Length: 221
Image: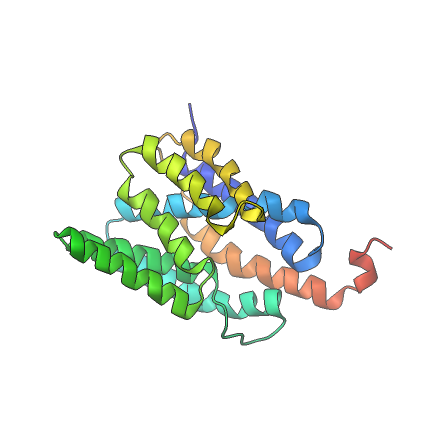
């Protein structure tokens, strides 16, 4: 019983797609964004699991880095309507920095050095303005530090959603917590490359839909 990595990935992918449909095509329909808040906490949880189980962390980071670069053009087009938008970077960069942080921390034995690694990566995420920036790194850190103590990591991760303020849509990210609570530690069928390809592909599709279908179509006229 419970939810495997495979099932959690699908929940994250579907809710992310709903979120992006709302952000790109129906920006004034808040319901899409509320559902979409479920995705990021699950992805952060899974990136910690991926780091903990990978046989080659450097290869893992290279793969994330490659798709971060591939995804940047679709990301900029879909969300900003520009081929190059330097003021924001896609979520793959956040996940890549999260893995780099965990790798650096794993190489340090002293707690002050681990803390310095975490802080330096959080600052870098802010400088690069990656999706969720330092807050995203903080959530990965929470799931990483308390990976073996889910009774702490899940409530802490749930509270993280309120770091944007109690009135923000991100509060609805707390809805990811029940799904994570049912994680059974099993991998399930492998779809390792599906998400990597799906992320830039669906952003391109959304961009073309927004660009080449008339605005009246999205207004329901």
